[in-house]
Length: 343
Ligand code: 1CP
Image (cartoon, rainbow, N blue to C red; front, side, top):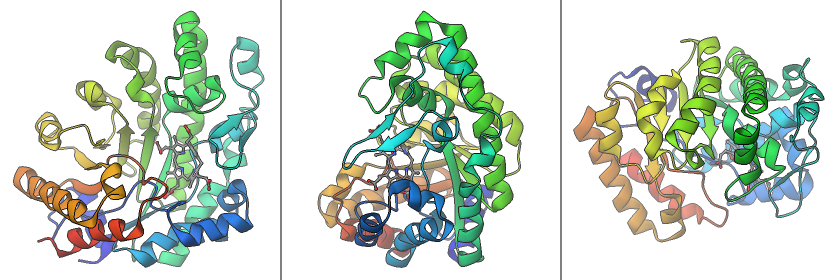
């Protein structure tokens, strides 16, 4: 099968010669071409220029046997378009100039026309599609509402996002209003990405796992449902909740087509819970910092599990979180080659 054919078959749940593979953060600082690109251009310039974004997205496809490309962009395009001021210091995480703390802060968000201020993202997808033609699958993405809310309130990265979680309990009405506002922008952004040619879209809830099940149900889930209701069945929707094992029984209510599992979730447990959903994952990215032999072994085991539990259907091979900076590219090749040789 050709990469795109394999990827599309997996999305539909049709028979495949073997599960397709793409990797979260497959473009990025572990690749020399990306580091060179970033030496010449700012991060936002790469995201906002379709030609540069496509160059970043293509590098992993040229180097590894992958089946799909993910548009090069970032989840923080949404707070940027809402006027919160998002910057990346050298070697640091993001900084948000105007964090959300009060109702007045939320009232000041520049909601009108927010999606049109992110038009560079669907344009990057169109350009990527024009370049790839029908050779590879194309993924669009956005941040899940809770994770975006967490960054907007906290003002940057954090281990526990305590400001964001405190606000949820101090002023739940404000938190819900913010989550709904974010959800509506995310839904319209994803619709624009689909229109531009995304074959599937992934919602990154990188911090959703911080929440207890009742908090996730009260705050995160309704915002996700707002998005899936708008997108309907136009393309498959994937949800990644890092550290979300304890939330798995709830996640089916989000209305997504499939789940991207982190490395702590047992594949067979998720498959039993969701026999007909698309499942994606879940090699530990830390393994890729080690040696190629352990990567090959783990990849083969996981592919065997996929074969045994669902004949490899409804399965996409991926990592349990993004590739870490400093990952040796040969370990990424070991994973992709193992998949390519599997039958
Ligand atoms: O060049 C640089 O120094 C910037 C590093 C970088 C890169 C390569 C950032 C800043 N974003 C990205 C690209 C990116 N981000 C992609 C593109 C696809 C690809 O690399 O193949 C995607 C899908 C994301 C998504 C993203 N951004 C997430 C969700 C996934 C995850 O890793 O959990 C999150 C949480 C972000 C926020 C963000 N953007 C950048 C950084 C360093 C961070 C993390 C900040 C933190 O919380 O510390």
